[in-house]
Length: 209
Image 1: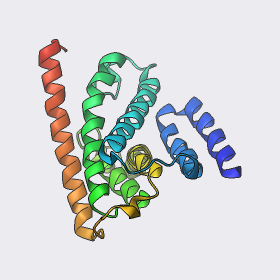
Image 2 (image 1 turned 90 degrees about the vertical axis):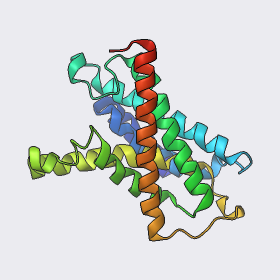
Image 3 (image 1 turned 60 degrees about the vertical axis):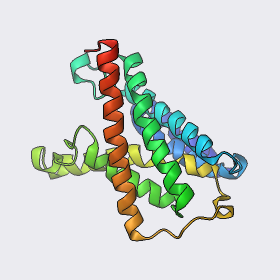
Image 4 (image 1 turned 30 degrees about the horizontal axis):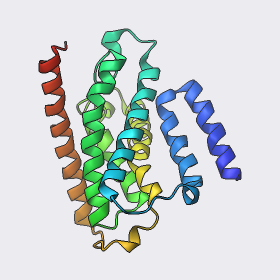
């Protein structure tokens, strides 16, 4: 109970101060109540993907709130318009969720491994690798701060869905090895490319600018 209360308080504090980082205490909160929110593994792919989209879009909403006070051209979003940003985000979070649904169904990925892989991958791709190169372009201190910041956004939203499935042992999964972390990284990059294609189609189809 103490962890639940503390994580809820932390969520409120971070939500008020740095909204996008509130996904981390949200992760802690869900982790603390996971025994009460368990889902069975029937229709696993569908459930996991839906959860991935929901918490991905929630993270995007937090990012929008974090950027509202900035001029449109300075907003770090898929699109400066909040509604359009969420529409574009659907594809991004859908493909990421699908990849993780496949990986967690097939291999014994854990909450920790998904958190770490997702966080590192986020550092690599965020702002088209601008965060990855930030220690060189903005200095070590700012660069490392950016690494931690992005890690604590990407890691949590990718790891939250698996918290709803503690009984994955009932599925016939293969033992996870180091090469599967590489596979996960490659599949996330594939999701990134597919999401890019989805966004291009929307830009062209809807005449976005």
